[in-house]
Amino acid sequence: MKRFLSGITPSGDGSLHIGNYLGAVRQFIELAKSNETFLMVADLHGLTTIQDKKQLQNNIEILILNELALLRGFLSKDEFEKIVFFRQSDVPMHTECQSILNNVTPLGLLKRAHAYKDKLAGNAMEEDINVGLFSYPMLMAADILLYQADLVPVGKDQKQHIEITRDIAERFNKIFKKQVFTLPEPYIPEEVAVVLGTDGKRKMSKTLGNVIAMFDSEEAIKKQVMGTYTDPTRKHATDPGHIEGNMVFTYLDFFGPTSPRLRGASELSALKERYKAGKIADVEVKEYLFQTLMNYFAPARKAYEELKANPNVVTDILKKGQERALIVAGQTMKEVREAIGLVTKYSFQR
Ligand code: AMP
Ligand code: TRP
Image 1 (cartoon, rainbow, N blue to C red):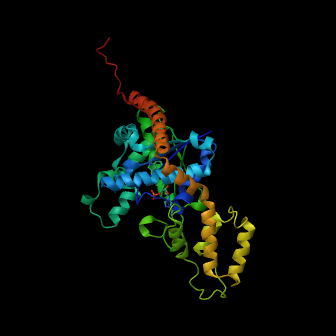
Image 2 (cartoon, rainbow, N blue to C red; image 1 turned 90 degrees about the horizontal axis):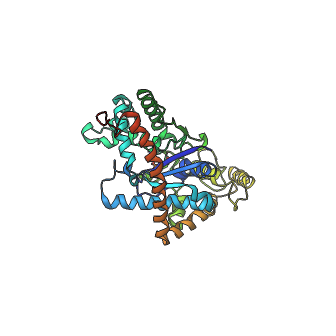
């Protein structure tokens, strides 16, 4: 049994979309079945972009409900209860550890980090970039190293952060001559590395407005599905259609084979054949996709409503998560303090 840890930042409006699900949460769910699981709401990371009290609180709440609903909806009660689900800001060791790691991290390592580099390349002046964004990978390293995680499931865009984390852990262990930190491995299944948005062109992302958000209202989801990019060369339902690059089929490939409505992969390949032969209209395959998604996410949508109606359940989960996280993070910080010499034994105290 391995230990894995991951986190999601409450960015955008806090809600999750099918890209987050396929690129991140689905892996959490699979891994949680047979591993020790730490899942964190990276609310301190949210501060790099959100500096409005109301928005931050709102985003954190939405993210908590979205993520818990997926976990509760797709895991058994036993599996769900084993997860340590917590808020980063509920465990003060994250910032303490970050502050110590600062001292073993070369400036150049952070200057090469994508988030910072991309911002500079996008015409932002150094004056406009806060140090929180610059040291984002340090906080993330602290998040991971505090829990001695073996595996970190994330989207491809986060791979560099795991590499930086390994680098920092190695340096720390070497400088202080003690194997305090476990070196984590990224866990990024190739087939779902990046999910494209409903525009069929760019990465699915809330800020680009090209998402399908599984906890939106049915009408909103229908609208997102109906606006999905299909095959621009196809003018009439009787024209032969193309599957490649057609986002409706891309999403059906992810969700269709397990859907009861499509009764497995054979139904999906029959649907593709009819589409290629010009025997089914775009609107019909979109309706299939809509139904497939509603079916697929039904248990999670139900859990979402239950959690929302029972705020005490949510606060209990967070409290229990905090307690369990504090124990592990506290133990690591004890080892860190010992390794670096921040101990409360004094030579004058004989
Ligand atoms: P974000 O909201 O961008 O912080 O994303 C939360 C998690 O979802 C991270 O692990 C991302 O790598 C992952 N993720 C976000 N957007 C996508 C996408 N379009 N495809 C795959 N994974 C994604
Ligand atoms: N930076 C990650 C993201 O944007 C979120 C995150 C914060 C995280 N801390 C983490 C992911 C620790 C994995 C492990 O998606």
